[in-house]
Image 1 (tube, one colour):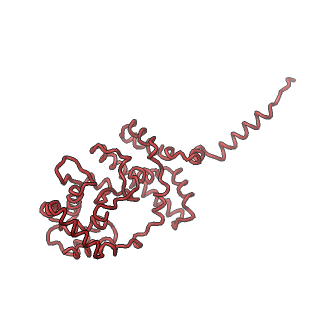
Image 2 (tube, helix red, strand yellow; image 1 turned 45 degrees about the vertical axis):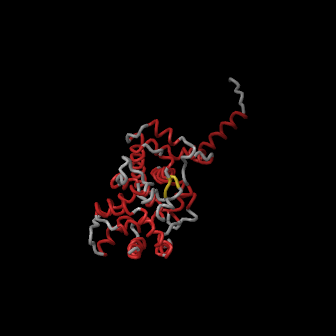
Amino acid sequence: MMSIKINYSTIIVLLTGLLISITVPSFQSLAIADNSRVYFEFLQQRLIIEGFDKGMIKDLYNRPEVYFDFKGVSRYFVHREAKLNYDQFTSKSSIKNAKKYMREYSTELSRAERVYGVDKKIITAIILVETRLGKVMGNRSILNTLSTLASLLDLNIREMVWNKNSKSCSLTREEFNKWSKKKSKWAYSELKAFFKYVNREGIDPACIYGSFAGALGIAQFMPSSILAFAKDGDGDGSIDFFNHADAIISIATYLSHYGWHPGIDRKDAYKVIYHYNHSNYYVDTILKTSELLN
């Protein structure tokens, strides 16, 4: 019989490696290493399959400023519309600033009212409530926000987010999964629209900041709304949503599309503004603010 020499040290090493590979999936190992770019692998593959330039996508998601935004996605579990202080926009100081804004951009507002039939006081009220007349437009990366939400299409990513937020989340696991499925589909569509917009305008996608929900610019449009309704308000050949003239005319285009017309009654005006933001608090504040601008 042939004698067999057993190297116990080698066996121990092999068994240890096997146990680690079984109990700690490679995805989790990479997560522990805090390599945020790994979280976007599935997302990148889908974007490339759907026709986005492979080199552009790979280079973009390899940049250090592009990362999985845990803090941003967590805000969805604590944000409550009813808790927002809308009264601040009808204060004397806010109305005073809004009237000053109307004087400063009277040409642009009057043109929007003339061309699209949308009351310039409504346009001003929207800009006041959305971004305090262009002064507060958000400080979160639109690319990171939409990419993070869109990546919830990947069940592994979804599991990771649930594990990190389950203790503070008011949703049940079933509700979270339902929310993630719906939100990731929406975010992916908005991400594609965002890429189309920045590519068309020659803008670096990693340099645009906005709200935690992915809205951007003075008018706080989502990317899909920019593609559908945004207009060049100052005739410079580009659509810059951080430009007041472009934002003003784009709001008018949007509201006109949904039915705003000269002489519209309050009931129909309410319905039109609701398309802009599906919040009764929001619509009430826009209408009240516009009345105070008379």
